[in-house]
Structures are given as C-alpha cells and as structure tokens.
Length: 481
Image (cartoon, rainbow, N blue to C red):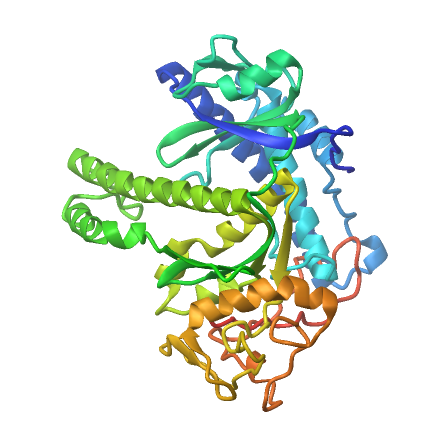
C-alpha cells in the first residue's frame, strides 16, 4: 500500500497535547484501546492458525500443493475477514458496536505491518535485527493506543477542547492555540489523531499536513560544528572557528536514584499482586507504586525537555552539524555503562538534530560508525592504535598536541564535513589510515554473544519466499567514545 505523500510546499508534522478526560471519557478511551488490541490478537491468531495447520499436514506427508492455502496478511484482506467474523464470533458480537470502527482498523493495520516486517526480515530486505513472527499482545503489558483517521476530528475554537469520533469533546490539559491558529488560517489540515496512555496521562497526537514558516537562518551559517556525545559530558561542541563548548550531563536518573530506591523498598514491603495465586494488590501497595511511578515520569519529562532544548539551540546556532552514528543498542549491552547511556539519550539527540535540521534547512552529516574520531589527532591526523575509556586526555604520539579526548573528537567531527568533500586524507577524512595498519579502529570487543538466526515460522517458508536465506551479518557493539 502506497504511503501518504504531502502536497507540494507542505510537510507532515505532529502536535501532541495532554488530555483531562472525565471518568466516562476515560472508560471510552480504554475501551477503544482494548478493541484495537483485541482486533490485533484476532488477526495474529487467524493467520498463524494456518501456519500450524500446514506444519501438521507436512508432518503427515501431505504434498505441498495439497496443503491448506495461506491466509492473506494485507490490511484489506484482514478487514474483509474481520467484518465477516465480528457479527458471529462470540468474542466480538456482543460489544463490537460500542466502539468506533477506527479502533478495530488500528489493530488490523498493526497486524498487517507486523506480518509485512516479519516477511521482509526473513527475505533479508528489512534492515536491522531479525524480526520474529508476530505474537499476541498481553492485556497487562500492551501499550494503550488507538488511531483515528476518519470521522469528526477537530480542535475546538476555544483552544481547550478536542473532538474525536465516538468519544466526543474532551478537555485538554494545555492550550491548543499553536495548532488552532494554523487551522483557522488554512495553513494546516488534520490527517489523523492518535490517543495513547503514557507516563500516567492520556495524550492525543494530531498528524497534520502543514505549511512551515520560512526557515530562520542560523546565527553562524558558514560554521561547521562537531557534536561528540558522551557520559561524562552529555555533548562537547567544537566548531571550525576553534570554539569548544562543554554541555554538562544533567543525569536526571542518577539524581532521582536515591529516592527511587527508597520508594522501591516501600513497594516491596506492601502486599502486591500475584498472578499465580490470584492475589490482588492492597491499597497501600497501589499508593506506593503510584508514587514511585510519578518519580519515573518526572525523570522522563525532564530528560525530554533537556534534549529538546539542547538540539534546538544547536540547530539555531549552526547550519551544518556533524554527529556520530553510534551503536546505542550495543552500548546498552555493556552492564557497566547501560544505565548512563540510557539516561543520556544518544539516539534521541541524533534523531532530533536530523529532523530539526530539515525544518530549518540545515545540513546534517553523519560520521561513519567506525570513524576513529577519539583516536585521531586533530592537528596532524595520526591515528592511535588504542585509546582506553579511562584515558581522558589525548596525547598525540607524533606531535606535541595534548588536549581533552572529547574535545579532540569533536574537532575531528567538525573537520569531517569539509574533509570528506575534499578527500584530503587528513584527520577528518574517513579514508585516513592508522599509523599501524592493524584495523585497530574496528577491533572492538563484542559484548553480546552471536545469536542464531531464528527458525522459520510454522508451516515452512513464507508465502513470498519458499527458500531460506543466509545468516545475517552479526553487528558488533561499538565502544562509547
């Protein structure tokens, strides 16, 4: 199915607002999200039932041409099958009419996307880690979410309410003037709305086709800045004018760790739920758990706010930004650094720099994952064989240059934007060679064991591929600089 493409001069952007639903509206929101989960589980069970049937038939020696036909996994096919079943199936017949049809379409669309990702992963078309076959969602752990694409979806003119299909008008916790002004002037059009339950609140995200304002020029349009991310300092900025800026790491999680430990001990001393015996939690446990969750939510909100302010400031200051393509998933496998890396949000910083650069018309250069920015001298271009993490000062072996390793890495990243275009082969060039050609910059210890490629799904090969593909390349965990 072809994706949506905005009109010429328009871009697709999201506006998210917190909601303050009353008791009845919150029940309706939970009902819609539960309906989406039920439709997803039905689609997964409906398709995988044939997979297991084919596997059983193959074990009986039945020929391939006589096996039970595959069931389609496309969204139109799932919708057609579900519309026929919902009137007669006892799981849906009594209550499916209580929710909007968009709730069931959300679950079916998610199931179709899951099957498509699984098939492309087995064929080797989809990048990233291998995808397992779709599984049913648990009622206790599934994320509450529902998407509306048709019906009455609007932002009210009083700027304090939004209207959604079957849910009616819901009050917003914050003012919606940023979006309502654009809708009133005709420079924005709502495409869809998604309600989710995150961090103890209900949120609504509007997908909007919008005409963005003319990009503001950067305060230093001709200056290139390199951004080196780290744990000691959240970011070190070095531009081509020689200015070096250290951004301290707020470490929001570490600041709240003492309180979280105290609250966690309090929760453990209360009578909590037990699924094995069917025991329900006590009111004191629910109260203590809610207090602990509020601390987690506050840490998340503080981190999100700090990262947005940092990336917005970088984009307002510089037109060309060079960032690293870090293997964050590999870093999280290191038990000594996982908590610090997760609290810093390296992946979020790079993602925000990229899309905010598109908004302002800037340029984003991504350094290669194996580019030795920390081990390269920013003065003479010599590359050291090794530079352990505990060595925080870079001392060149071929010139008298001595400086902080993070500042040296940021300077190399800033030089990369010009050096790659010129192909000079100096410190910033990706083709620069180490003084001892042992590929030392790529000899990073793997922190995770190689995983075997998961076996095929029940029933043999996928409908689009009857032969198995080779093992995917195993990625190594990059050492944080």
